[in-house]
Image (cartoon, rainbow, N blue to C red; front, side, top):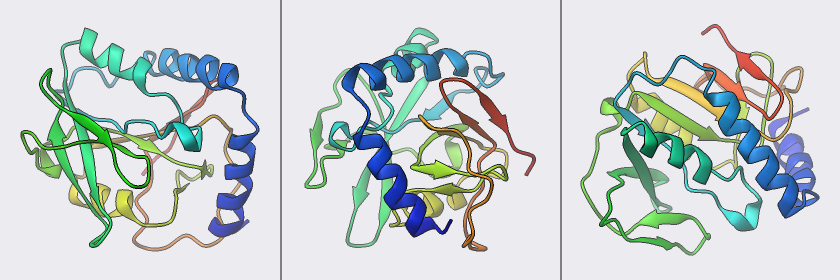
Length: 189
């Protein structure tokens, strides 16, 4: 299927999930993540879940990162230039939802993309080659292209991999891993 078809299909599948399903599967994803050898780094970028879109609840991963005393980085989106700015999450960070219901920091200590070691990537679908389908604005492809080559990119998905995404672009940045409630996919980039 094409990105557009996959986007439509997986948005619908997500809406069919109950709150219980989302919580149970989000916990399972966080537990799966603990099996990965990615916890010896300093700066971890994570998205704050859009509840209205029934995204993976990243609160459980935030708890793991806090427990491991990691530097947690979150983003603020600029929809005029389709770019994200990244901030260190601290005890004094104020978070508010923007017009698109994305929880974001109001301000804080800015962190450059090339300082980030691990990125947890939101997605709607992914394939066996490590390509992903997001919401279609290109925020994450721009952000990931600014990161170092060795930055570890981990997709989080309630659903298993598609065989292939038909309309992949040269500028699409592939994942290193994708974690679902039942499986860890490893991609060789």
